[in-house]
Length: 150
Image 1 (cartoon, rainbow, N blue to C red):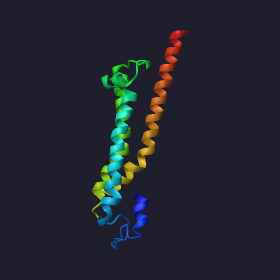
Image 2 (cartoon, rainbow, N blue to C red):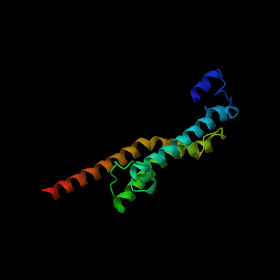
Image 3 (spheres, rainbow, N blue to C red):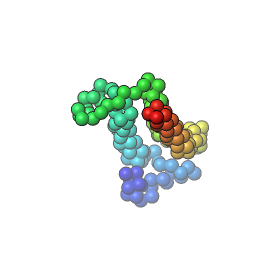
Image 4 (cartoon, rainbow, N blue to C red):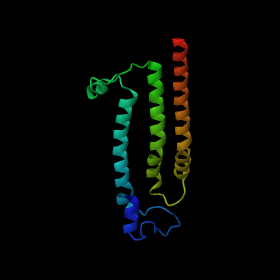
């Protein structure tokens, strides 16, 4: 949507004349605000769906799921770990969008710009670490169950 908006403005999209490569303030609503609103709505729905999948013992999950779906009980420790990973991933993905709002109206590089770059650049590493942590936990519980069966 932002790319189409930029194409249809025929290059005026980034023409600020202040040595700063960013969207002009008069194009912010169509180029930034509307796409971010769509992404925010998507994030809320995604968090809801992820919560249902990560925490199947919640009452709302029981109302939504059919009777043929088996709901496993999880321990408090596992629930805390899942909540932490969910929060960490969502925080890492959402903070750059929040920081972007602080950078919109400033024509010079500020601390918000640097924080945006740092957090945005670390997203992949943080998601990789949370994935490895989750795989390690699954591996450990699998081998514990395997040892109990033998």
